[in-house]
Image (cartoon, rainbow, N blue to C red; front, top):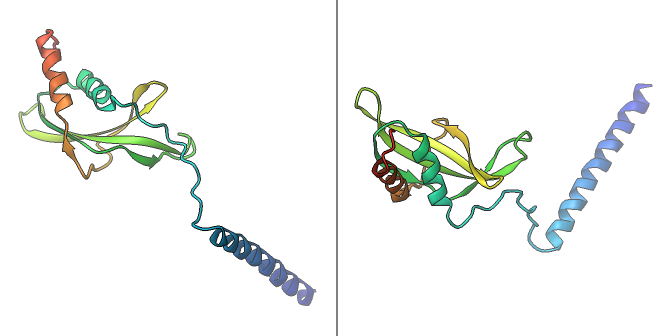
Length: 147
């Protein structure tokens, strides 16, 4: 019986590998490998202002500076629907002891509004100035906001 199982297993494995190799060869002969279309929702043109308003309304501290990344695609797992567009914002703020600390806000745009993904769980890199957040905070203070 062992003599029959081993060749059948080897034959099945060979057929599987040949199928994978044939599919790969077909992709290469058709030109560059085709990328699957992204399921990520593109951000609106005013995404920076939307993010500034979102974070500004939820910030309870004195903000010293803020920086933002360009939008990037992030894997959110199967529960979040796969890939989505995210933006990372580094907020440099005073903590309750007056020491400047950094919060990293990761947000996305879903269903017509900014949604939080994580805060402080990722590092932000390739940052650029984010004056829109500073303007949003100043405007809220001018209107008499308590935060």
